[in-house]
Image 1 (cartoon, rainbow, N blue to C red):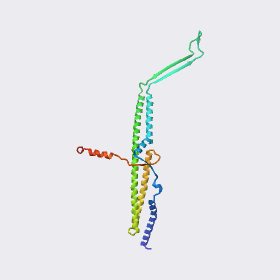
Image 2: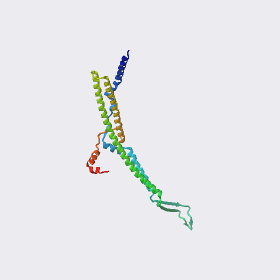
Image 3: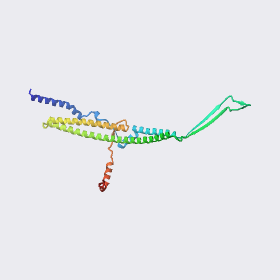
Image 4: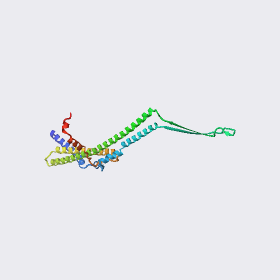
Length: 268
């Protein structure tokens, strides 16, 4: 066999192997498995997600318990600065009773009472402890506020991440459909003798790549939904039910329109 014949035969074998390896990919692209389609996920609004996260997130509950603990330590420290009262009552019964001329000299039963009041007039260590406990209460409250703020921001970001991931999934699905149409068109041209097999294989490869991107985007959506469910303290993934509307851009536009151009130009 000549070198040209061997090259032509090797090319036919390569094309055949490519077709055999590519056919499962085409079948997978045309019919996605049921597990990839995903199950129905509960949807939640933006405001409801923020409110549930602030009410049920374990981090906020832990911060609230820290405030209660700090207030308890403050009350304990203040108790050391309060006046203290100590009272004693002693009862003594003796026998036999000492008598003289038929009369007892010492009473048979004796009762002794005593009381003591103490006031810390100079206690710099306790003063410092009370001040430190008060500062710790303030720090705990500020920390709880910061925790609530962080949870709210993280929940909002997770909600927007779900929307962004879902939009990316729709974009990749649209690109996959376009790639499938391109592949079918290239295959029809090849069968009709107007196109080359190389163009059909390239279109098939592009369709396979788009299918992989779709699966990655679907996984990203699932992860974003699970992250939102964790922040809201739900036992299931949550999906975004709506796209929140923010008026920040409108306020910035009004401020820019109402600004004085002369004042802006006169700034150093």
